[in-house]
Every structure is written in C-alpha cells, then in structure tokens.
Image (tube, rainbow, N blue to C red; front, side, top):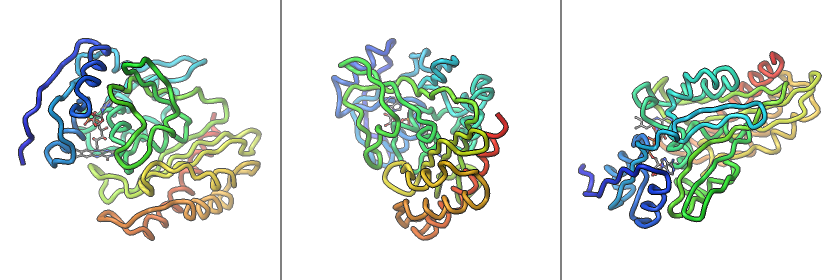
Length: 291
Ligand SMILES: Cc1cc2nc3c(=O)[nH]c(=O)nc-3n(C[C@H](O)[C@H](O)[C@H](O)COP(=O)(O)OP(=O)(O)OC[C@H]3O[C@@H](n4cnc5c(N)ncnc54)[C@H](O)[C@@H]3O)c2cc1C
C-alpha cells in the first residue's frame, strides 16, 4: 500500500503550526510521533494533502510539576518519556506504569501522549487513567487557548471536540491530595504491542480508612472512555476491601457498553471489566493507604 502524495510542513512555532493547520483543514493532519497517523494514511483511513510536523516545537516535550497546579505534560512527550521521567515517577508513578503497558519500546519511543489522546481510539491506553485522575487538556488554536476536561474531549471513535486548527499542547493532571491512590489495569491478547481488550483506570481518595472520592473509568468498552459513575458512587463512604471492590466490579460490568470484535466478544469484555475493576480498586486503595 502506498501513501498518497502530501505536502510536508515543519513549522518553527506553535502559532505557525496552528495557522497552517487552520489554513489547510480539513485536508491537513498533525504529525507527532506518526505511529497512528502514518498507519492510518497507509490504510486509507485518513486522506490529507498537508502534513504538519510538530518536531521543531521542543517546548511541547517539557514535563513540569508544582504542588499547587500539579503536573503538566507536553503533548510531544513520548510514552517512554512519561515512563522514565523522574518527576512523574516521584509524584504520579501510576502514569509511568500505565505508559509501560502501551505497545513496545520502539512504539513508546515515538508515540506521544498527545497523539494517543488526539487519535481518540476507544482502546487507547492513556485516557482511562487520565480521565480517572480528572486530567484536563490545553488546546491552542487560531481563536486562542482553552482548557477542557479530558473527559469532555472525546465524542466518538476517532472524534473529538477539537476545532480546525487546534493543537493539543499539554495534558494537565491536578495535584493529588494525601490519601489518593490510582491505578491502570489493562488486558490485551499479548504482553506487548497489543491494544487493550479492556482497560480500567481507577482513582480513589481515602480518608481515615473510608473512601471519600472515587472515579472508575472504563476503556475499550464504548465509543469513548466511560466514567462508571454508579460503580464509583458505590465506593463512597465505604472501607475499601474485597467485598466493596467486588460489588463495584459487578456494577461496572452493568455500566459498560462493549461491542464484539476481533479482540473479544461483548460478554468477554464485560467479564474483564468486572475483574479489572476489582483489581484496579484494590491496587488504588493499597496505594492510597501508603501515602
Ligand atoms: C504497532 C503499534 C502498536 C500500538 N500499540 C498501542 C497500545 O498498546 N496502546 C495504545 O494506546 N496505542 C497503541 N498504538 C497506537 C499509537 O502508538 C499511540 O496512539 C500513540 O500514542 C500515538 O501517538 P503519535 O505521536 O504517534 O501520534 P500521531 O500518529 O503523530 O498522531 C495521531 C493523531 O493525533 C493527531 N495529533 C497528534 N498530536 C497532536 C497534537 N499535539 N495536537 C493535535 N493533534 C495531534 C494527528 O494528527 C493524528 O490524527 C500502537 C501503534 C502501533 C503502530
């Protein structure tokens, strides 16, 4: 299969990148690591006459943290950057752990957190945990800058609310109050280079042994990441133990809307949601207790 001809642009600044994207949309695509978009171009899933590379926008690789605002990860940070960054390992180790569930070292060295989000593929690994942790995204476009909750970005498979000319610049993860624990659990058909059959992100806030905040997010079981609000609510006011986790897992199973495809039947996915939800809750609770 051959990629059809396109014009390749390498802007020096973010403003220039937005202007090019805006001028050539809808016939333009951003190129970050290229691990999704080049495959899609080859498979004729997207067509575009203009590719706008972000490779000169070095600032968008930065990862920074402060106690007041939390973590800011530049959209061009690769999954390997997220997995190995000292700040993330210290303050958000669950994000490093989740990054390591994705693909293989080769893909992690190229694929970016921004690309994973903007692709809006239902099985993507970064969104479930980030949504569970109440992350936001910063978008910059011709009309200026806006920040929105990551949960509100996705509207369907490969569809987001991003407007023509908008570029995702940062993923923002709020500070974690003491007593927070989070975890991502993924099931795939192989250990490496396999998309999630199901992915579950869980973030809990535990105070004096009682759960006071919970957010469980299910990936690959609906067109967009699903906040399992009933399962999350079932944990509030409870001591997190095997029984409460099992009950929340049962509820999450009812809340998801999986399809059957080559990676698994809908029923298999429901069972996985139940199992992974229990495991994610118990691991998140263990981490909350350790803080
Ligand atoms: C062999 C293989 C295995 C894989 N395994 C996994 C896996 O296990 N889990 C998983 O989640 N994914 C997996 N992927 C998918 C892919 O690697 C990830 O989604 C990756 O994070 C995409 O990032 P990228 O930088 O390569 O994006 P690109 O391919 O450069 O871009 C992806 C899309 O997002 C847009 N885009 C990129 N960055 C921005 C930005 N900053 N602002 C606006 N739009 C932007 C592009 O225009 C394009 O539409 C796999 C891919 C391959 C080829």
